[in-house]
Image 1 (tube, rainbow, N blue to C red):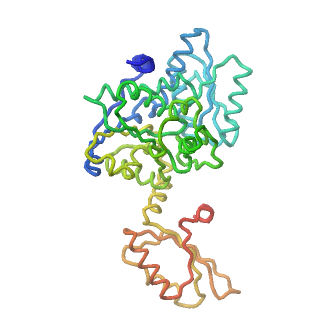
Image 2: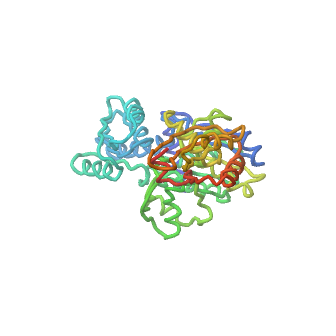
Image 3: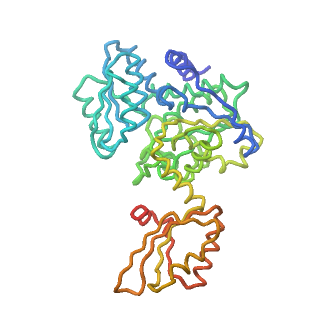
Length: 415
């Protein structure tokens, strides 16, 4: 057993003070779909519904062992890391100051406060995370407190490595391939570190959101780089720059091992897991399952472990998830039509719709000074092929229209 694995196993044993090993479950639905033996490492079933508790607890435990007087910890987080640290603060009876963006949903603030109780203070600072992080670090410089990074910390990485220790303990032999979600890189750095020492023949794939592909960018550049833009939908993994310490452990991976998951496709995966399996996953928690179609030829007949990293999903977001899923699957489209201002024009258009086409949005702006009015229309259907028939009919009737489904600027403004 290597030195890193020894530390990871010690972290795993210490974690048993607060929760048992999370289940490693064979998923028959996914196994049948892909012709493989697919197991889910259910990190969505920790006390805080994500793996982040592992790193926060381990770093806090080791800091207090090194300095028993260390009784104040600080972090900046809008989600799972905040909840993990709050839970650890309450367990150790220490003070925690948690900085969160002003824009953090109230549900996440309430859950963080619930886990931390009287042990934590929540401060809302900044509209964007960069401002929140700067405020937290400035606070640490003025107070005798330790900053607890969500991923760029060796002790946090060590705590996340406990996921790998449990996987290897729960299977009779190592898996052929492990799929790990990537945000800041703490989880993937820890898990790969243990497997490199214990089961080096196990292969890896790393799943990150298409709009936050910081690992792919770092692999291409040979060092961490800051993305110019980040899509925040996959909030648990939407990181503009992978951590320096995690990347130092990951820099040998190949570009082909890093897979990008489109945000809208992730929504299809979330709904599939919810409706078929009854498993609630947040967007980041669904990453490892979402990239399985990209691995169909690689995984057939093999034993695969997907780490489902979190289940902190706010069901108020469900309509948005459904909307994104329908649009990605081609089952919902938005058009702007130029409708002739004459009797019967609307009736002609409605006659073009098929039996499974349903109007989900309709806004008609009639202007008396023009011969045409603009219509915003959203249409849902049961088969993506239905839209080909509708578009053909509109073309044949010489209707003037514009498909704005994939126009992000217009869709965000109008839909």
